[in-house]
Image (cartoon, rainbow, N blue to C red; front, side, top):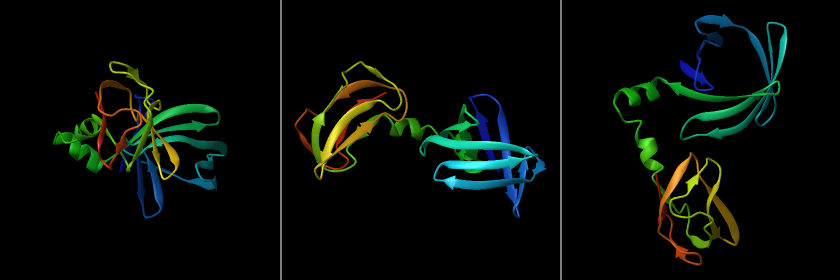
Length: 166
């Protein structure tokens, strides 16, 4: 079973048993067609829905979707997520965000942030050049810049600490 929390409020329980779909315990029959990656059409109770997945964050399991022009923030949790939460181990997600490390060896091209700056999800933290390509490293959640460990023009190795975040 998967629990979907919509816009940090209402929850919907989704389940699939033997190709039968259940929403909040009620059987649902619908027609789902994938139009292209991230775009779907659903026919449910003689109503048509156009669905677009605008953003997905695999770490936090959050998704921004648009249904018939209206946007929704959705977080998905399964029984393993609930178990990790009960054991207090889901805090490791926030601990993983505490440091920005180099995903590959490269050269620091630009650091458009400053210590103490509050950065919103999706904003650029650092630009790293690797294999003659510029890679923009962005914040995956809202963060504050605590310490910038590297300098513009510095070569870095994979997994080297770049910026300490909170």
